[in-house]
Image 1 (cartoon, rainbow, N blue to C red):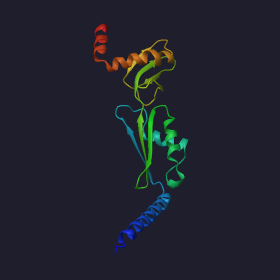
Image 2 (cartoon, rainbow, N blue to C red):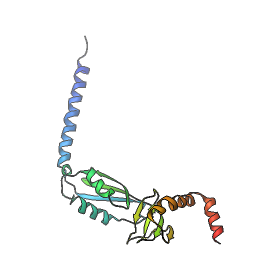
Image 3 (cartoon, one colour):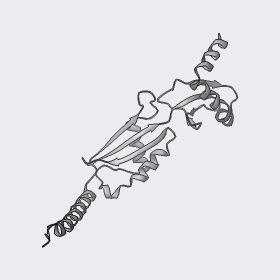
Image 4 (tube, one colour):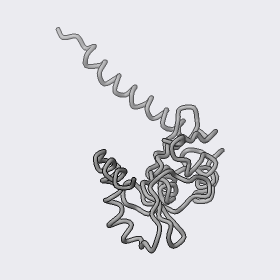
Length: 177
């Protein structure tokens, strides 16, 4: 005679798991956003954007998120609003178990500042960044009649070479003095 316990126990556990997960999901949709936690990577090295700026970007581009249910908030839309800012390289948005909304920001890192036509930065990926009123990066400065195309196609690779090649930096220093 076979024991019926394994045949009853497995379907019972499966039904129990489905009920619990459904209950948790329904309750999760009712949870209201209680706060906003913003983490900015490399904020000590580059201070192009602050926590208040991120809050303002979210409010301006998406609206108020505090005291709204998580079911009404679209994390992808909020990420897109943040990534559209020219100093933000990436943004990760997620909800916490404590009822708060978490935003992790990675800033773009400039490697070249061009003082021509209003001025701008070129970042590590060769993309143009505007100057900031809040922060000035300590990077190589180029001035004169420099077009954006020349800065991104000619100066950018040269600056990468200088940044990555110790011998090229030493040679450039020796030629300078």
